[in-house]
Image 1: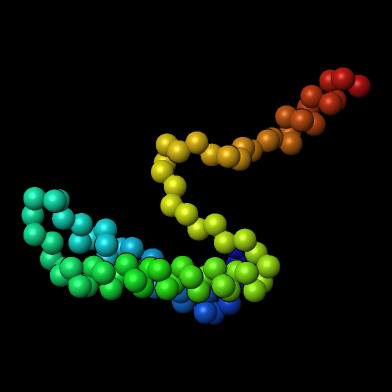
Image 2: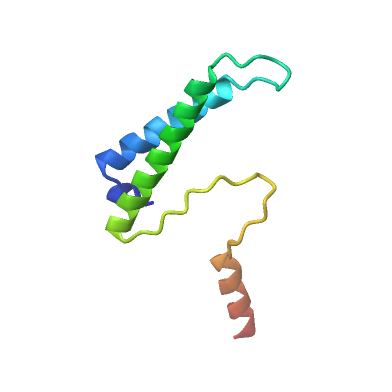
Length: 96
């Protein structure tokens, strides 16, 4: 999303989403230990994520922007790649 086109509501939604993500990371507990949050609280956090994402999709759709906010693994192959224009320019100069 372009920073210039983000509304206050979208900024607030993203901040809340980031905060909930940080809480989830900070309270991560290995399976053999008891989680500090109750299962009700964990479900409420999941529901908040669902509502936030749904609203972000609605706002992006209203602006005519596709909303593809999906988590990515670091080692996941990217479907895009960067092409250096400098190298392209250099290769065209050699042909002239």
